Amino acid sequence: MASLFSRSANTKTRIALIALFVIIVGVPTLLMLWMRTPYITGAMNPITQPVNFDHRHHAVDDGINCVYCHSTVERSPYAGVPATEVCMGCHNQIWANSPQLEPVRRSYLENRPIPWQRVNRVPDFVYFDHSIHVNKGVGCETCHGRVDQMARVYQAEPLTMGWCLNCHRHPEAYLRPVDEVTTMGWRPDRPQSELRRELRKLYNVQSLTYCTTCHR
Image 1 (cartoon, rainbow, N blue to C red):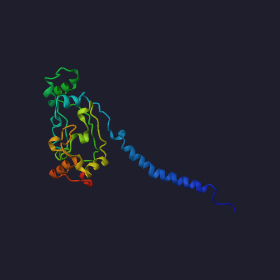
Image 2 (spheres, rainbow, N blue to C red):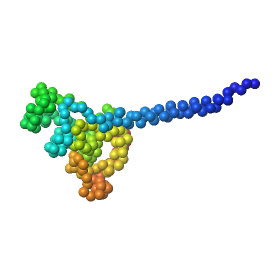
Image 3 (cartoon, rainbow, N blue to C red):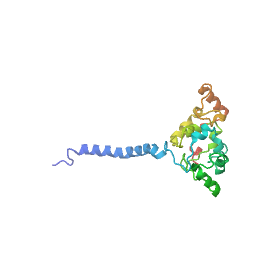
Image 4 (cartoon, helix red, strand yellow):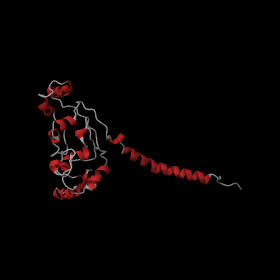
């Protein structure tokens, strides 16, 4: 009587099972890894803006504090972008006739906002409050990188859930005095571990990792 299965049946079955395992496990894994690459997160990709605004010049050469332009960062979920009137407060006297500032002058005269392009973005289902982070001692550069060294601003960090949770699990590693929040390249004047433990206690910083912290 002829055999019901060929001699290669076992081998073919093993190959099929391995292929099925690769499809079920490997494909989702690759997709999750792909979603964390800069191609998807947008990290390290300089954004072209309607005005050639150089943060290096304004923050370093002119010594303008972050809060001067992002004026709502200490009291609002949103850092905000400066109104054209803020720009013209200086540029109606400085470089007033520069061709580079034509979009700013046109915005001011036509009473239309400059269409700045957003650089750092989290999904719509994520709630992020700038003010709570700033007032607890999380520095601007912790999330935004050394903006004072960027000709064109780019997203310095991936802003993924895992990246956020690393901070939320151990917030003391990222704290600094509140009056140093906007200082780029800040370094503590004493051991970081000692200072940051004190700051966590002083600012009552908690490790908030439950879902509704960010997903509301």
